[in-house]
Image 1: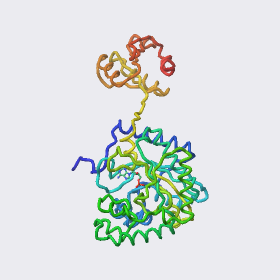
Image 2: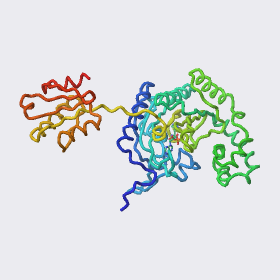
Image 3: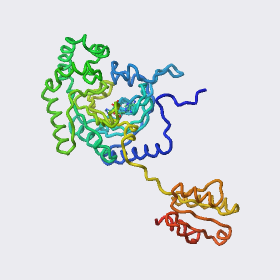
Length: 412
Ligand code: HAM
């Protein structure tokens, strides 16, 4: 039996888990301020939920999904992302009466990618989806929410917001034709991957990492020249509103994103401090996804952030409450010490009792655990219903009646 973690997975040890919780709590608090509500979907779905929505030619569907047959022969996939699951739930739970619907979620996602810094096979996302409004102000609302979360996590200044519009279906169709014409004339110089994408998903050649492809792309037609009136007006509204909000961004005509459900606005907050896996928070608009899955026409826009990537960047550290140590100074007061700690915990105080050690060892342990105070419980004091309260920062101590301990400690 192998006792290694599966490649690309991680154990979130207590210190990391505490920081993870801090990030999620911050993001949750800000999403609630924007009027978003939390929901969860299962971590596995019928494979079709993802296959039919993310795009047959995308990397995720082609080579990264954890798909298996369950005991009943159903084809199941561990969710690689949250948007398709939310869209599925929107339809199967009959949520269309509730639009506009502002939702957020967090939890593990699964992709069979090559693990490297900031890239895992089981990773965690915090994501938001705004379902219903076709207005560009919905894009501004979710982008500004992402901006505020990254700002409060003190990493916004380490990120650049890349923004693009891939237009509506009509604009994109005309653009893809022009792009394919241009790239076909240079097909032999494209990378093997690029040549394959020319047949299956030509837009994705725009964000190819291959040097040769990138050179060819420099002279490729730009999508901006193919927008129809509506697409242009939509994007202008988003960029002008973001400017008014004071949210800085760079229009990146090569940003196309790796999923097929997008139209109009797409965006990525990227950080050069992350290395190759630089996308921290990414998303876009997906007006046809829910209809394409069999639901009513319902525009949507949202994003997801990789929590592991945020953890690599944020300087924030969790502020855990400093506990109080209860220390029996004699064997006979061990059970009363545990009982006193239990009673103080019912009053909301964080308490520690150690399972072994003499007085000096227990005091040392209390100091190393950054306890705010130690309550020393001896047999004589206990008989008088008292204990010695020792403040560990100042070293000062006082004798306190047991029933006054909660108020002495709570008023800190
Ligand atoms: P995505 O760009 O595939 O979009 O993933 C969103 C974020 O998840 C990325 O920017 C990155 O921070 C993180 N991420 C992705 N893959 C990994 C990985 N293997 N390891 C660690 N972090 C990773 C989506 O998932 C869309 N559902 C976003 C969206 C929501 N669009 C509209 N609504």
